Image 1 (cartoon, rainbow, N blue to C red):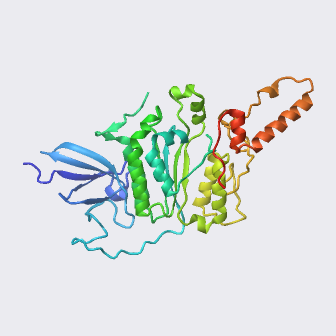
Image 2 (image 1 turned 45 degrees about the vertical axis):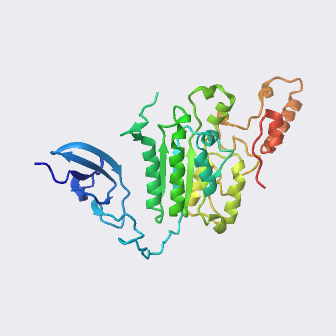
Image 3 (image 1 turned 90 degrees about the vertical axis):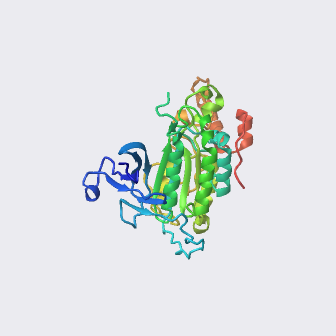
Length: 373
């Protein structure tokens, strides 16, 4: 006899099972038909059976409500803000945590300029939401691009979105990194443009960005393909994407740190500086003048010198993008001492004027964006 309810929810614990919840066994619960469900679990599988045989199943990552009982299935309302008759309910006032949250979305092998080319809608949305792009940030497919007839990378973006939305009123740290889409070739990034722009807009409308430091980044530019045979491709490889949006009240609450942050957009910075900034947020060591920072890097909330060198920023020589020609320094000179002094003076002058677009254009044939007023 066919099961009258062919749907079931299998709550899974993964490799490290919780002995208090299922004694080493997966919890199987009957699904409510034709109703919106809420599964309060970290991970679960939805199954459809016919005559006890599984005809369809799909795993889902859960976003558990820590205030409710774990590993339960309950009926959920379609819209929490309205009752069954469409009347707006009086919601409890939203209480934001005293500390900032951090949400990071990363794309493998993605340079800033490549991100601009392939995701114009997303860049436009990020610009409207107040993301700051850093212009001096230096630094055979294994998996199929599709799963169950849909693009698998959308599931990772959706997971990043759901996590930030679910825990917007709870201090949290989230890190999502997408590798399979852009590691081998950059042009496929375009397939995420409309979806990512929509998710960013939804995060903004829901208030999930209000109290969070949001980062969209790449680890490095694309290292595979024909672009590596071009001059611009070699530059892109060493200048990954780094875009940061600060919490809504940050500029007003911490004006000094905000001022340094804006100025540092056009200066030479590295991943060590971003790490120090993240520690400032996580430890809430903001608005203080006597902060002791250990390790490498200068926080982006601290003023970074204009004439900073790659060596001072802990950037390896082969990744340095200051583009200073020192090829003649190693050649023997008749008057070695005077020539060495002359070369050092020339190098120091170029470094000092590193952010001047006119100087770079005259020296190397291209220009950089000027510092903001």
